[in-house]
Length: 374
Ligand code: KG4
Ligand code: ZN
Image 1: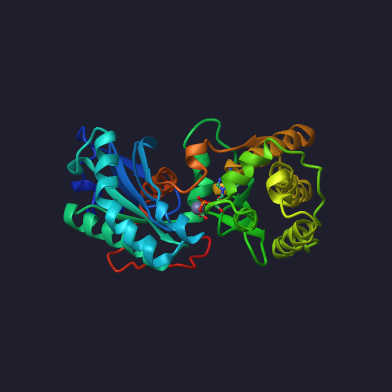
Image 2: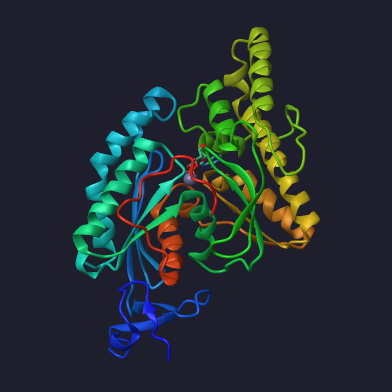
C-alpha cells in the first residue's frame, strides 16, 4: 500500500501515532493519499485585529470556549477610526486579550494545537499586530499557523451555533467596509455575485450618524433612535444599480442636502425629529440591501439565506429579513449579536475548517489589506 503522508506532522502513516489515545486520523477527501493527524482534543487560539477591535478566542473541537473583544474608545474623539491609533491600541491590548481567552477556555498555552489570525482584508498596521503576534506564538509553541480571510470568517460565523445553513446558501455581508451578496458553495468556496461600487452600508449608517451629530460608531445609535421613530416620515431615493451591485454615495448626499434644507428652515430640526430621521434612513438602507438579496435568491432559486457582518446587528434589518423570509419561503440565518461585529470567535470557526483540511500557512506570511475572497 502506498504510504500516506500526514500534512501536519509530515510523517509516514506507518510511524504515526494513529492508534494512541491522543491522535486520530482525519482523511482529507480531496487529496487521496493526504491525511492530517488530528489530536483528539484540538484547541485553536484565534486572533482578530483587522480594524479597531482586538479580539481573541479559543475553539475546542469545533466549539467556541471563549471569545474576548476589547474595543477602542479613542476613535470616538476623531469621529472615525484613525489607523495609527488603532495599531497602537492593538499592541496595548493584545497580550491581555489573548491571556484572558486562554484562561476563560480553561486551558494553558501548552494545550494549543494551532494559532489562527486574520490576514486581511483590513488596515495594514492593525493586521500587522495580530499577524506578528500569531506568528511568534506559533513559532514559540512549535504548532501550525492558520491564516483566515476576515470576510469569509463573518460568513462562517453561521457554523458556530445551530441551526446551520445548508450549502449552497446566499449571504449578504454588510459591514463598515463591505456590502456584498455572496454565494457560499462550501466552507472554502465562495463567489461574490455583487457588491457596493462606492461606500459600504455600514459607512452610510456611520456617516448619517455623523451628520446628525451622533458619536462614532454611529450605526448602533441610528438603530437605537430608529426604534422610536416613524420609518415613513421622510423619503430618500433608492439607488438603481445593475445586477447585484449596490451604491450608497447617492443616499449619503441626499441626506446631507435634506438636512441642510430642513435646518435652514428650522435650526432645531434634527433635535426635534431625530427618531423619525433615523427610522427613515434605516428603512431606506434596509430596503436597498434586502431588495437586491431577494432578487438574487429568486433568480438563483436559493431558499437558504443568511446575513453577516457588523450591520447584521441592526434591528430593522433583522426584523425585515425575517418578514421577507416568511413571505419568500426562505430559511433565514442571522448570527448571534456577539458574532455580528468583529470578533475572534468567527476567525476560530473558519480556522477549525482549515485545520481539518491541513491548510496551514508558513512563517513567511504577511498581512493582505485587500485580501480577496478565496
Ligand atoms: O463587521 P464590523 O464590526 O467591522 C468591519 O469589518 O467593518 O462592522 C462595523 C460596522 C460599522 O459601520 C457599525 O456602525 C455597523 O457595523 N453596525 C451597525 C450596527 N451595529 C454595528 N449598523 C447599524 N445598526 C447596528 N445595530
Ligand atoms: Zn468585520
